[in-house]
Each structure stands twice: as C-alpha cells, then as structure tokens.
Image 1 (cartoon, one colour):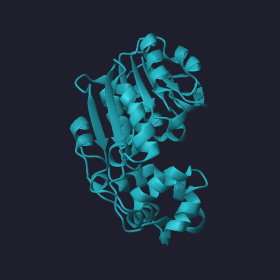
Image 2 (cartoon, one colour):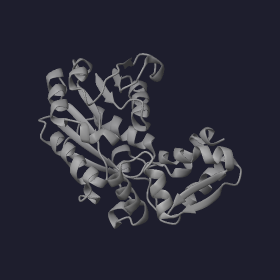
Image 3 (cartoon, helix red, strand yellow):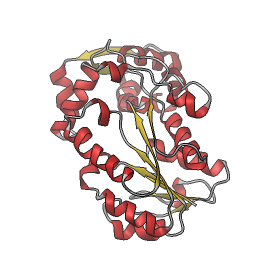
Image 4 (cartoon, rainbow, N blue to C red):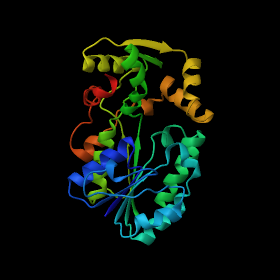
Length: 281
C-alpha cells in the first residue's frame, strides 16, 4: 500500500489518480480529504501532518509513503516523528516532495532552514528515500483565474523574467515512478519544465487556450509584495520575489531529470493551459 499525504493538493491529487490507475492500493490523506475527492477504490483518511498520533493509523500496513513537505506549515512539522511512525507502520520507501529552493536559497529560513531540516530527517530515516525538488509550479497561474474570468487581465511582476515552471502532473508522474520502481533510492531529482517561460508568455498561452485576448499588466515589486503578504509570511514573500525577479542561474536551469525518470520531456506551460482552460473561462 502507498500512502499519499497532501492528497488534495496540485501534486497529491494527480499522484493518487496515477497510482490508482496503475493498479496500486492507495491511501489518500490530507486534513479534509473525503471519498468524493478520490477515485473509486482509494481509501480516504483525514489526517494532519502536525498530529503524528492521528497519522499513525493511516500508515499502518503501508509499504511506501509520499511525504508532502508541509507547505506553509512546514515549520510546524516534526519530520523525525513522522518518519518514525512510518517505519513503525511498515513503510520501507519514502519519497519527499521538497523544493528547489533548498539548494538555491540556502540562506532562506523557509527553504534553507526548514526545508533542509526535513530533507536531512528523510536522509537519516533509515528508509529507502528519494527527494524531489521542483521549481515553480505551472499551477501557480490559478491565482490569475479570477481576473482572467472577469476582466481578461493578468497582473504579475517581472513580466519578462523567465523560469522553467513545472507541470504538477509531471511531478506526480515522477513521484509515481519512483514510488513503484526500484533503482531510485538515494537520488535527488530536480524537476523543471522544458524551457524558460515569462509571466507575459504564460498570459499569452492562456489567451491562446481561451481563443480571446488577455491583457498583461506588469506589477511593481511593491504591488506584488502587498498582494503576496495577504497569504504568505513576510520572509517567504521576500524569497519568492527574489526568485521571481532575480533568479539564480541554477533556478533558470532546465533540468534533465523528468526525462531521465519518465523517458519523455516535461510538458510545456501551453499544455497545462489547455488542460486547465475551464478555470479561466
């Protein structure tokens, strides 16, 4: 059995579908997961990563664990206890969804501090482990859905700075492969899209998918900061703005790891836009 944490998120939801479609026995867990959120035959068990006691029954009898890194609540996790509970439940393989920023922003508290500590716990767990470090998600464009639907407008900072954003479905397919296949233990895979794309280009891709013009409005750094502070802690906002506005060469590098694992190139943002265009209509 494979336990998928963060099962209602962008990666977890797709991973559950992929594993179930491959005939795996899957348990999906997140704070508010229900049977309506998962394919037929998948067990849905609400649990919180910050409550290891509540997580233990979910892990009992599992062979493998997909561990989401906690996102905004990462600093609240006790990864050592989670991994101990996994071992006690029978887990022998763990795949961690981490972040590229652990390597590229070591000075950041959220990435280099908290993120690195979670990775270190996984490495020291005694389990077969794989760490996935994706860059920016294509699905971050969902933040534009409301303005695109109502005004056919996208507002974003740093309109012509490119990053190789990754389709969450590609992350899920890589995760499914390394959960199911031997030969990946001890690997750290950096996951990116196939090419640099800018916010302006992503707005154009949405326009093409819609078949209608979408106006791009470039925000100032201060406008973007004020918007991000509505749902992100200040230090995370500053790191995010630095990545978006002044990416390092490593953050702009197109990684070969998706193709190395899956045997095909990662999907471009245009594919993501066409598959998700209904959210922007």
